[in-house]
Length: 526
Figure: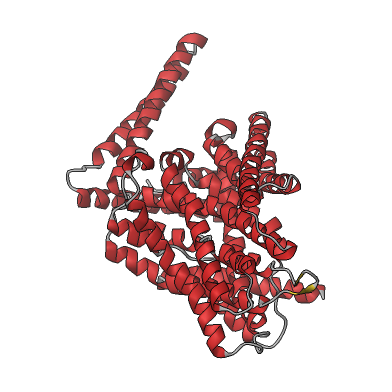
């Protein structure tokens, strides 16, 4: 049994690793390829892995949410908070209610509470695939913030609605007052627990100087938040998101440079593996979903699944268009969305593992009897996930390129260049202060001043290279500088390897010098 699980894990890992370069070369999103591979594998003879909702909600969802929150911008989300709330609170509620109402009316014998539960399950988009595509084609900072903010907060809205609907279906009653109270308790409780844990962890990490210990604490934070909030019967999702946003906003103050470099590598690898396994797992569930549909005729299946998919796709653009009609006083200072931006946001509603895990969590019985239409509801949810992931995943990239939305572009590079120059000037001033305060010997003082001046001159030249009167030329300069730096560092590595092979450098010293080049190369753009 153990060998079978290990063999399956190795096979899944191989798929995840192989798909990444294929996706990069073909332009087809990795999520789509992995889902298709999962579907094909699920239809082959042999063992399949069944999605376990408890595992998804406890072990997979917290680290993915926390990692996304660490990378998001708290300031940008706050600046667009009303737009984010319109998407992350209003849209899931409207989607859940619309799907619940239509399904309960279209399928005889289906209680509204159960239909509402399925509507809540498929209501929250999973932005993983959409953001990976959007970043590749240069999606603007504002749209990226809206998608990130929606993806971080809509799960809490949808899962709370789901829990209220399931309680009503199993317990036999729905109370608007109870539902509102549940929302308020979940939101306030999750916020308080997440913020409290973030403050505690922030103070702990200020006193930790070992990068391994620092990152060990970081890995434990999402699970601590989720478990604590769940034990208090509040929103674990919101607790994780609040903690991640708070700690991500403070990362420059509470962690050392080596700890942050290591953290980016750790969380990047965690995201890569978990997301890959998730998309494979989604595809593999097809045989289980369709195996118990014999009791339903094709017309019923098509009508129910078509209604769920159609409403899921239609409500989002309508809701976004409705936001344009909201009075400006209620929108705050956020700039109104343009039609092109609405079109783009309308097509980033891919559903993922959260929707599927919630659907698989539907209870087997209600009031001591088998839950009515459970297999049909599971089929509807799976169809929504599959259609949005594959359909929208394949077409989002071409759509964004066709829309030609404004991207980060040279303006972002200009801001980064100005920030680098300001930081170098501040560093030079601090060096001068320390030289005067500590009576540094002249030889060392001259070398320190020369190093600080060299940094200022370097970033002044880089700032001057960005001639924004010709945006195309600026893009060419940025691209050429990045390529030249990459080639220079590659040549330096090759020379170090030649020294090692000639016996002039040990492996230990080679790794030390390699690390210096790695730090110079960095993960981001120039």
